Structure formats: structure tokens, C-alpha cells
Image 1 (cartoon, rainbow, N blue to C red):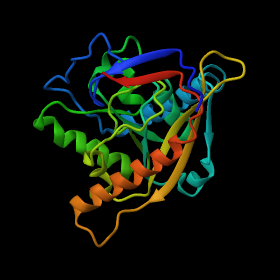
Image 2: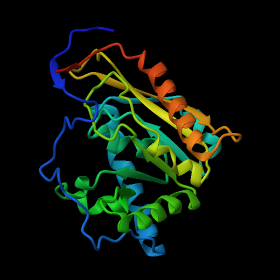
Image 3: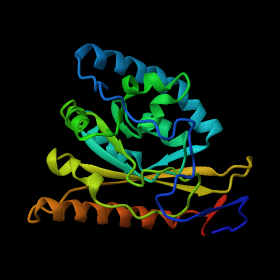
Length: 253
């Protein structure tokens, strides 16, 4: 890997928030509603189609995102799948799912709903915010269930916090892998790697898709979660070896 980085970021833990928003501590209101209506879904599909058309040239010409191995998803075009990804691009990770799937949901942190202009539109665009209370958790899980039952792609970033241009895969636990145990569907991962751009200061991003993966049927649910976590983590680590440019260097403080 080329080590001519342009910036060094110091961190204490892998769970540090490197990118902070103005409403970083925002929590969902106690009466927040997770929408399930047919009309909401129809409007959401329309909005997703518009977003897809708008962001396609942005991903290619501004963010320099190239997706490899997309063909493995072709047999699942109209089927439910889970797609886990490393979290290394605030804008790219928001746009990338629209380049990969034509019907989708994305699990997001609640502070994203406070982003100027686009924040209120995110749920209709497919965002499912993580709840803050146990009382909201049932509706959250219902939205996750709906995503699978409606044959959508559900995108999940198990690292939780975005680390821009990170070339390492940060450790994550098996919590995010309980969803495919409860509602089985093929599981994939997408790993973003970075290479030096010939024409631009910022690196180009190459995203590799891998899968499908399935839990081992002879294990109990807890063991299956851990097994899936290990499969995805190991696959991402293998792909991360394809990073060739360290635009940002992360150093433990």
C-alpha cells in the first residue's frame, strides 16, 4: 500500500465518532412513527428512482466509485437480501446502495434525520433509524421485517461509525447479524477499498461485492450470529488487502 497519506487522525477506540454532525446527540422522539402504509411505500419507490438517477453521475464522476462483481446479485434482483458494508464514506455510503439495488432500505443512525433538507426525506428514501428506547424497538424490527417481506435489499453498516477513507476493517460484534437469523435471506457483503486516482487528489473507491453467505443450520441462533459475523468480517478483511492508497492514516492515541 502507498503510505503517502494526506492526513492523520488519532483515535482512542474503534467506536470513536470521527465525523460528528450538528445534532450528533439527537434521539428519536418518543412518538416517532415507523411508516408501513402502502402509500408511503409507493412514494418511497418513486423517490428512490429519482435519487438513483441524480446520484449515478455523482458516484461515478465526483466520488469516483466503481463497483465490482455486481453480477452475483443478478439472480436476486427481485428477492430480499442483506448487504453488510464497511463504513468509510459519509456521502458515498449513503449513495452506494442506490447504485447496487433498485429497491432498498438502509439502517441509519437517528442523527441523520436532522440533516438539512434531506433529513426529513430519508425515511421515505429507505432509511430505517435505529431506535433509542425499548418501546420503539418493536416498530423498528417491524420495519426490518417489512424490508425482507417486500423483497428489498437491506443495507447494514455494522461498524456503526463512519471513518472516512479508512483502509482497515474495524472489529464489530454479532448484534447486526440477528436480523437474517430471524428473517432468513441471502447475505452479501460490500467492501470499499481505495486506490490513488490518476486525475484527482482524492482516491478512487473500488467496491467489491461477495456472497451469498448462509448461517450453518446445525448451530443455535446465537452461534449463527457469531458465525455470520466472522464470515463477513473475514471476507471484508480479505478484500481490504486490495487497498493501495492510504489517503487518511488512523493512529491509536
